[in-house]
Image (tube, rainbow, N blue to C red; front, side, top):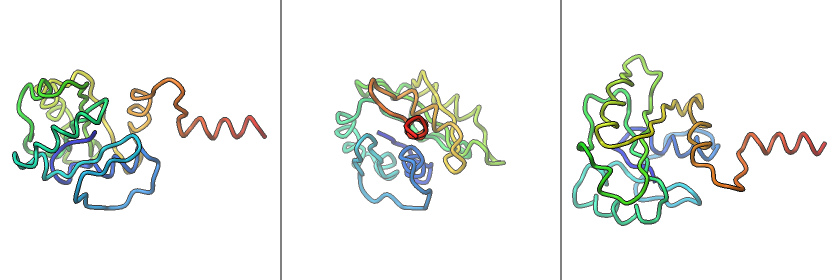
Length: 154
C-alpha cells in the first residue's frame, strides 16, 4: 500500500511498478490492484479520511510511505510506523529534480520509523527494480525475467 501527500508520486510509482506507460492520473479513491494499493493523498492529509488508510493497511503486507524529495515538510509525524502492524518502508520520489533534497527526505522517513528506504525516479525507472526485488516472493516472475525466459525458449 502506498500512502503520502497529494502529488508526491504514488500513482506514477504505481504505474512504474506495474510496467505501465506513465501518464498523469489523479487518484480519486483507493485503488486496490492485484498487488498494489494506491491511495489518494487527501486520505493522508485529512484525519477523518485517514481512518480509511488504517483499515486498508490490513489488506497490505507492506506499507510504503512516499515522500517527494522536493517537499519543504513531511506530512508524517515521528514514529508513525508503530501505528500499523505491518512492515513500513520509505520511498523517496523525484530524486533527480534540481530541487530535490534526498538527504532531508531520508531523515524524515527515518524519523517516521522506516528502516528500509528506496530512492526512485518513476519517469526514467530508476530504483523501480530495487523495490520490485525487495517485495519479491517465492515464485514471482519479474518483468525482466519474462523477456529472458522468452529468449531461452527461442
